[in-house]
Length: 321
Image (cartoon, rainbow, N blue to C red):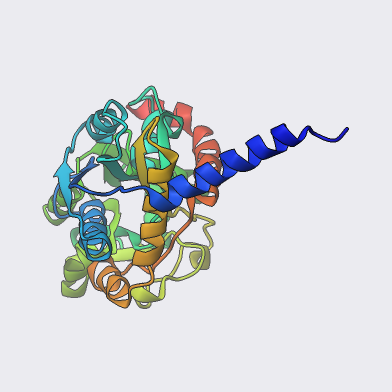
């Protein structure tokens, strides 16, 4: 049956209004507060501040980055979740902040409690490192030692966080049997590695490059499907016989109920930013990170797939906490 003309006109008018709203939104017209659940100086902070720099270049409006570390990033995510959905409070985080915390039950909410804008970048700079003092020079030595002496190798992490899950998945796939201890943030992991208090950790290469070059830390591998060419000759774990692939997408999100036009406008702005050559150069120099981007729909699909995969490790993650 043919729809009445009035109904067809109503649908067309609604579509036109939606398109007009997207095109004519005056957002942003004042400073945006970007909240991150990490301390200054790390890879998450670096990515947020780099985007803020180019956001102002594209829009003429500034972003203020507010660091709210602690609680596995739940302090930050809760602040954004409970903020006014006016487009001027934004979350910049990653899957450790919005998915792993749900899996580990550090938070009783996840990505569904936010308006996901996009995946503006993907961390492909993560590596596993060992302290030179440990005597572990490669993955085979690590596995052999833990099989001969279970729990003799100490893996430092932030319990309930992303690197904790990294350690669990690596152990499941490799057969290694490490003792998992809570050391805190990236800076604290490095201090503990250098001090000989832990033996292995998962961390961003950009944070440990100087120590790798000096010989104080040994890089064991990168958990990428293929080598990130910006990491030089560091082999993947797949090349070493372990099917360990674990990339970490960053996430831009707004409080639930934020106007669709604002969310779409931010997505458009990020598409402009990733085309700026200087932005790509900053990522490369900062954390050996290639440019990556997933729009809203594809980003949500990817995040849901990651969530489903991580959920199978929930009991193990909870057992060690």
